Image (cartoon, rainbow, N blue to C red; front, side, top):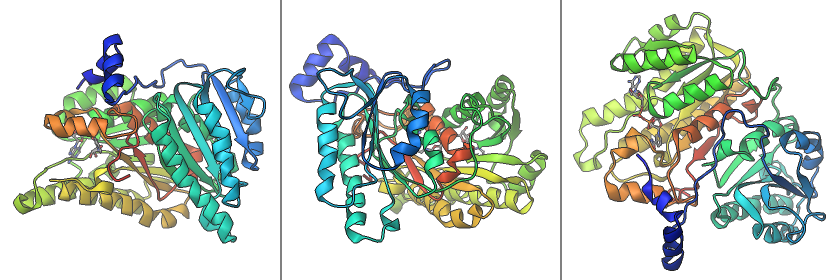
Length: 444
Ligand code: NAD
């Protein structure tokens, strides 16, 4: 469903009115388009004294030719900024946290539209010195506040980079500093060492086979398109009733269609039979809502949502593992929801199922890591799809506006996030949840 308010807020008259009465002023977000030449199209400012920048330096000119360092760039002489990286990993005391203010304050007045900011630190739990761990933990509050202040469609994330994870930073930058993460903001993620690497940045998933459930429409269809764009051979799964659109999409993407109800008793066996060559990437996207306040919720509504949203991803993954179908160094992505983090009126069943998926990723990650397999949850906020178009006006508008970016996301935003987590080098991230919610205030 089109969000007409964004068009209005960006019209001449709308801009004046919105500014005068203090309404949200969302901008049209830039998104990744095919044929883009450079990951960052504009100026990149780097600062901070940590060692992480040194490991990144050889890759900077692959991102953009316009790289500036903090002392050399000034708002008076430098170009407007499209991206910023601040390496805060050397900050070991509260006194040094002022370096964040010194770096960001002048830059904030000289930003291009839709700028992307990345702050790098060391995982606080890995530091022995309590004062250093405290300073690193403080970065979370700073980065999330900056996300709420940056405006112009900007995003801000914090990456805690463990020792040995440095080689995977380029893949993270290619996501977090570009329009691929247009609707991801206020996130804190940990990177650990990973032996897998992307060979070709133009087709990072080349040679991989990827299964997407619920792929006939909405977010699932966008995920299938994006994984195929990145070089994966896709297997599209959806219910038999969706066969027509599933077949059409599979034909367009050169993939395979599998018509199967994931909650059917024999779904595991049927899936195993449909994947004779096994699979590298599994995206559990199929999901449903059956909303009712708890006092009126029937057992059938509860059971149906649990069976499809939570039990099926677990059982299908288990069946793939037991039958040797999920390859070593595989990537598993579970579609959770911000509802599973914040809770939501009328969604006790749905929120429980989605919180369960977040728990499943955390619980399974250590065992799967022994085979180099990662498992993560992606939690979308308000995404413009059939599911959200069916919402009543007031919660729909609240869902869109109650976020730092002041708008809903697009299926492509979720798809880009899944595609990044599916990359070989993204084995550096596991057992975590990444929100795609425009820094929604729900569950913040
Ligand atoms: P959608 O309803 O548009 O699409 C879901 C797809 O899953 C459909 O094609 C449907 O046929 C398929 N499906 C449902 N039950 C199935 C089953 N038993 N077996 C196989 N396929 C089945 O939903 P969407 O908005 O694209 O959401 C995709 C995922 O993202 C869901 O897991 C949803 O909970 C999650 N999510 C969506 C939003 C949002 O704002 N749209 C927000 C948070 C989370």
